[in-house]
Image (tube, rainbow, N blue to C red):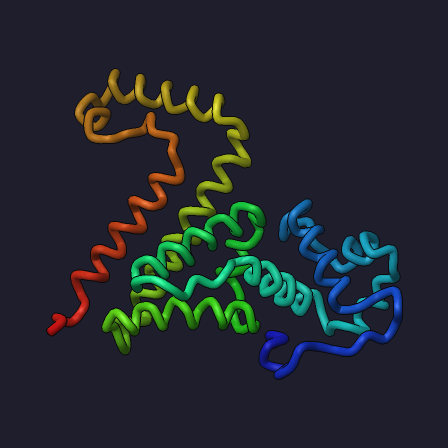
Length: 225
């Protein structure tokens, strides 16, 4: 069961001056940044804290608790955007989400596999829903719009992170793109003329895709008087 279903408040009190839930979460984020979800374990976390593994369970019930807490802690790095038009709020919020997911590549995997019910996650969700509700969406259309936007951002960043983890440098990226363009010119010239494989500007590509989704949402808005 998610920790957010069990706790209504901010967490357990400190029991030892050397260890606290806050220190555990801070160390968990650092461990996830270094090793990813696959390399995360309570034993590795305890070693990073120079504590016994069992001592962690005085502050959390399980590894899943730690992952939930670390996830919400990092989501808190997304600065709330509350001023501007509904499109400006969404672009600002989702662009920041991408930045945070790039700093913490493990974030996309956890966001796809557990309920986002922590205080930071709920606050950011409220902003997305409120901006679209202010635009005029409601009911299933509102839920679908939020789902489309978050799925786009998560999927884009997951692919982006995987690409850079493999290719690693802009020079290697440019070399691969040049080889792909040459291959398309040799074998599918028509496709080569329709694509921009040689464009390695991830920022512009992200914003263009986001604008296209927002255009689709705007086309579904009820007519304004």
